[in-house]
Length: 329
Ligand SMILES: Cc1cc2nc3c(=O)[nH]c(=O)nc-3n(C[C@H](O)[C@H](O)[C@H](O)COP(=O)(O)O)c2cc1C
Image (cartoon, rainbow, N blue to C red; front, side):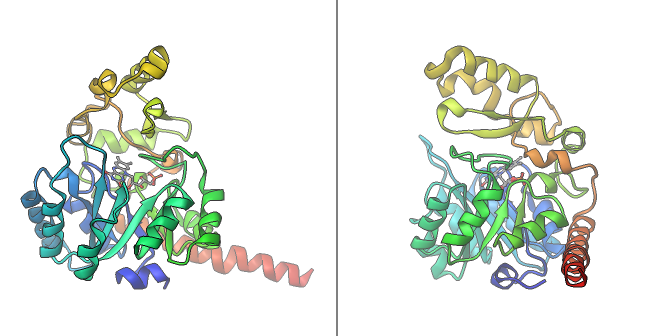
């Protein structure tokens, strides 16, 4: 399948693996890229720019296909060394960067000067238009269903994607709730040029996370995620667990008085304990509603090949069949 996204990033299939804290290590990105998608290393999971340089080099040892790096811009008292991370990306020869969070306008010139394609992840059409206006090459349009931060507008992809298609000139991928060939065909039908997946890629053989995390996703239904940190306007969709229930109880009790400090135990520094040690109740961790569609733990190649095969069958047989039948009728 050839789309503006496969052409832009030099990949075989229009499937991107979104940046994921403590999941987007070299092993994850290499497995997705080797399977013909765009695998993405998550910069901020690496403590220092030198660690990111090392992670990019490790990934290069595992694949000669294009890879990307996610740069998440978070509001922070002590901001990470973004210039250092960008230097590591450039010197590592990476040609694709997924930006997320705040407006990436400050880092765009240096990325573009170095021939890097920038895909900005956003949860609102107005943010996508902003990304287009400042020179991003593509956007990843993340609907309300998504694992992680869906923003505060709560617009699901059935509306958000066609709205993006109506407004944008640059290509975009769908993101949030995507799992299979049906997701890909629906995304293409709504105007996307490919799709981005997070949660689905965690439940794969190569995902470098504890087996408990994969099993939790397989066991979860579409009813098992919760939105936390709403009162702080930093909403995150996470898998429900004991820590999340405690957190939601605090949100209810404190209401408008809730401060980040009140929930530190449930959200700060919990990712390594969950993703690496498999301590499933250690805190709140991002997970999409799409968990309800995930029932197996394939290799990335099996997953992506299966998606492409299913998409082709849907386009050629199911959808094409409707047209033939209507002609016959
Ligand atoms: C465990 C986890 C960690 C994530 N961490 C990040 C991150 O650090 N930066 C980022 O831009 N997006 C992050 N995301 C969001 C994903 O890149 C992607 O946009 C999202 O998972 C898409 O929704 P889906 O899970 O329904 O596929 C994370 C998602 C998950 C599930």
